[in-house]
Image 1 (tube, protein in one colour):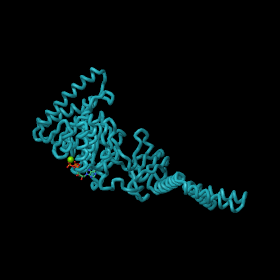
Image 2: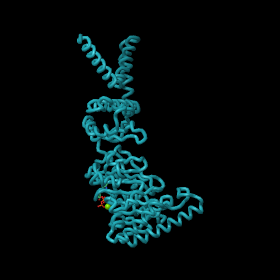
Image 3: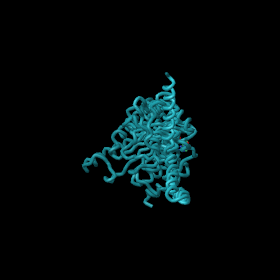
Image 4: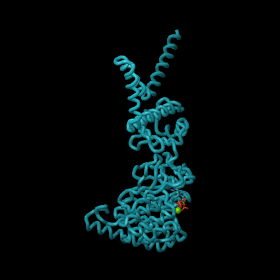
Length: 435
Ligand SMILES: Nc1ncnc2c1ncn2[C@@H]1O[C@H](COP(=O)(O)OP(=O)(O)OP(=O)(O)O)[C@@H](O)[C@H]1O
Ligand SMILES: [Mg+2]
């Protein structure tokens, strides 16, 4: 009684497998069928010569014409990625193997591929995130990372990284080729996992950088200082707890403060007065904020080693500095004042949370722990899969940047060595002298 049912189910299974194979190899089969079908048709209608000559001419044309060849290459590459990914999903343990994500789009990137997926009901991004390592092993690639669309959690962007985008010793900064900048435009700061340049738009923003010692905070900060210095319409105020990190830029700055906390307080008091004057000016003009069209200069306040000023041994001075800076960060944006601050760990015992929480953009270089990473990026990001403690400590300058997109972006900052800084600072100084 059971025999017919079994043989039937076996036939069904074989048919399913055949259909699956046809679906999986559809692009290759289609590409094979086209010249073969053409050859058969020509043989029937015109004889052997045309049956051989025409498909050969077709294949030769496709291979010789660059755009056609590239199109074919992309088609075959996408088909291969789709095939391997579907097989990797199929081999996953648990629910994802049954309800495999639907592949919507595959785009080749400089270092791998980006795949847009739709999740089926009953599965979530968490299942995929847990499977990242298994997927990477199945595909035989360096890394697989999944990020859910913040509006629609069933849409997932999966980044496959084959080559190491951050493998080079240091990435050369595009600012080195620029004669001058305009700080109203976005600043190139590094390269993401897909090899694309990441930019940061500074007007109306304040940036907090954090990370373990030697992670690359000062280098990242110097990129932003360079971009500001190369715009002669920008006023720079530099605070450098170590003195040596920003001193190269002192000739381009309106004021440079070292480890003298009293002087730092005086400068911040002056900046606060200027901020109030600027609001009076905006009131007279009948506008609510400084824009590119208003023609008012942007002011960039840069603080490296913030801890020295807000958590120094003289408690009263530290408190006064923190209060003044909090006011500047809170009210300065619309007045065209941009604050960029770096510190190793901005935990509340060092940077008061009333000040830290006001920074809109966060840049976490490598951190020792998930907690330290959350302190820089904001609570909860580590559990969402964004922890700067997972970054490779051997790759200095790698970090997570939380800015416009609303989701941290992994990037490696461009590197400016001492010679680069000297050259850029001199170019900026000449620009400011009007030469
Ligand atoms: N983006 C980068 N690419 C390549 N190397 C980098 C990069 N950023 C930093 N480095 C290397 O790491 C070193 C330390 O960087 P940096 O001084 O910026 O660290 P830091 O986080 O400011 O450390 P600290 O907390 O001690 O001030 C640099 O001298 C440089 O050699
Ligand atoms: Mg530093």
